[in-house]
Length: 270
Image (cartoon, rainbow, N blue to C red; front, side, top):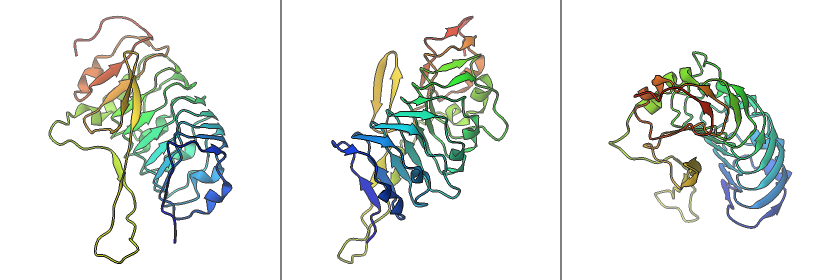
């Protein structure tokens, strides 16, 4: 029998991740979040199973770098590594995660420039890098890096400089749509498992995505992420210049936080 899910979040587990995890070739979901685990992340976590869809390791005490070898053809849809002590750069091999919908690396010690190349991920909805050491200007996007489905981006409390990423606002098309007719939530169907007694149907369970974002100094916990939530949080950086009128084209936007920067000029009517 193969274990298809290993879900042990919200316990008091300690120690390191055993390298034996690398032998779990058929693992679909790995959730070790909200424990007291420590040590470095095994490099195999990025390529030990081409069936892995959920990788949730947030709220632990992991340190060192994020595994660098996310392989072509992987099935990862959610990567949550927030609230650890991870360092180094954002792995360039994440561009191989073509099914990725949710990437949360917030509250670590990552030092890098803005990874515009992630805009090539056609399914990415949620991108959170808050409270790290990201720096520099956010440059204009290249044509192929447009974040077509991006609805939530949180870059708050980093060291970004320069003007706001006006050209990116133009390309975030998912934020231009007002989703008012059909409510849905981000989730992933865990692989159906066949019960011990042969029956006609399968038991299918769901893994629901969640996140916490800041607004007006308050941490808002979203146990579910609906398709109606759109958010841009760029607070706590060193952005300069004016607020571009192009932000007004994001008609579906319902949370915008540009506080604690060095912005000036008029607030555009748009």
